Image (tube, rainbow, N blue to C red; front, side, top):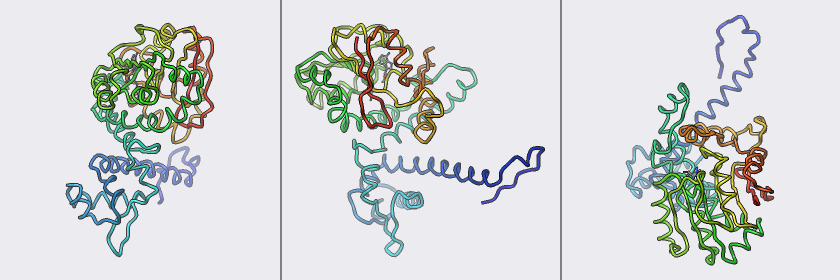
Length: 364
Ligand SMILES: C[S@@+](CC[C@H](N)C(=O)[O-])C[C@H]1O[C@@H](n2cnc3c(N)ncnc32)[C@H](O)[C@@H]1O
């Protein structure tokens, strides 16, 4: 591909090869966007799960099995083949989802499943017009402005952590916490969302008593229903609460999963958590694995973190006059600063290999 640069005074400073290289990068990113949108359609219409369960398939067969329109499905399959998501056998005119792609696109709740993340991004992008306004005027977009895909997608996305890491890796990495949960302690999950983390803990450690709090009221009903379905309502309850204004009761373990960087008042939140801990208790904070050095966050994950920040994390905090830390705003030095100010005496990072999250244990 070639580009024509209009002559300007400093045209000699433009390196044509670098322009072409950058065009290639932007084309790849742009193609990634359309591929992600199409993949998300496949997720929502059950196309991926059907392909995972069947062998080589024609567009007509896939459309018939999933109750979708063949012309659209044919176009979708073409795009997914062009993007490298499915394989195409020209002689048979059939498409196959390779087994190595199944965990990523079709294994609901699995450790590398992207369907929830894609649904969440679709939910975030629905506030695009409001974002243009706040880019100009300041302020933010409130949680109530987002499409349900934001919350459905978030529940499906973080279910991957709770199904595959919480009980398997995270709790065993924190011996005091594991002991408290096994013995039977009082446990709170602040910013519990739809409650999947707390429900998983209640299933694994049935002697403990659990309460989940969230400031966004619509999540609470969903969390209660999920606890009913899981059969753990005898030991799990969910309440609507802005925890930065205080947390009722005292606890042996308090969790936040991906909450503090989003908070309107992270300092107040940490103070409330500190005050709600029993002596010898633990605060377990899962938050974004990032650096206080901007350049150390560069790369695909850092770009996605900044995207989520603008599209959700930072703007929902700013919407309420909040601190607006943003997705990469709670790096270890920042958490240490906030924790010291809140009266915690120690902070440790669990030795986990997790590019997405850090797991911290803080002691009163
Ligand atoms: C990124 S979501 C994570 C939800 C859940 N922990 C999960 O991992 O699926 C952050 C949640 O924290 C909640 N939250 C933020 N600030 C809060 C506060 N001050 N009190 C209670 N909940 C809060 C938000 O409403 C949102 O549901």
